[in-house]
Image (cartoon, rainbow over all chains, first blue to last red; front, side, top):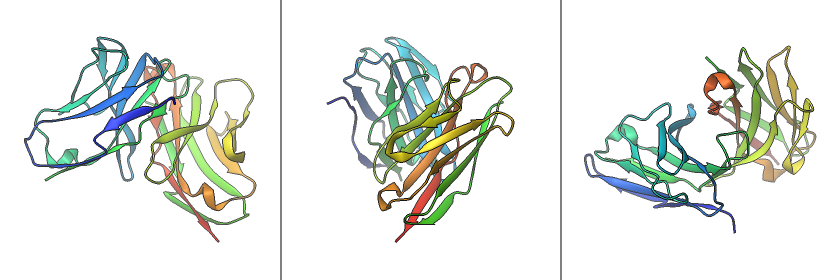
Length: 113
Length: 114
């Protein structure tokens, strides 16, 4: 089944404790991205990747890191999480940047205390 | 800069009634336009997209949207609402000016009354 998986689905952590949210897709997509969703703000892009070893900042990259060492994986790293990073995070993938359908993961709800 | 405005954070309709979700965009160049739907506790999935072909676009689950350049609108409609349509709907625009990144509206939560 074609899908984007994210782990964990739910995470409660404390300020400053490094964490990684994994994202994996099995559709051989070149394009992957991370979004955060906050009430009333819609989706805001954090980082995106056009292909392996190619990443770029989105609209709200501060406090986040990503890497794309393999085509299928695109982890999101919070080196020192803060409460303002409490949010719902989505990973998405697509054949190219955005012309074609973006496939979304189920989301990761992160709470930083 | 591009922007997307969705009128109404919540829209409530009765089952069987017309669904109309409004989306207006700002862009100085021809846009690509998308509607995505998010069911409770799920990720987003594509409903339909406009990519400069026919101005009336049909999507999944009986939804359709019409691109009106003069009004810079891309409203989503469905003739008869079903309980299963209860979800949050997002409009998004993409242009060369946005560096081909999707610009998202804030979303509209559709509530279906029995």
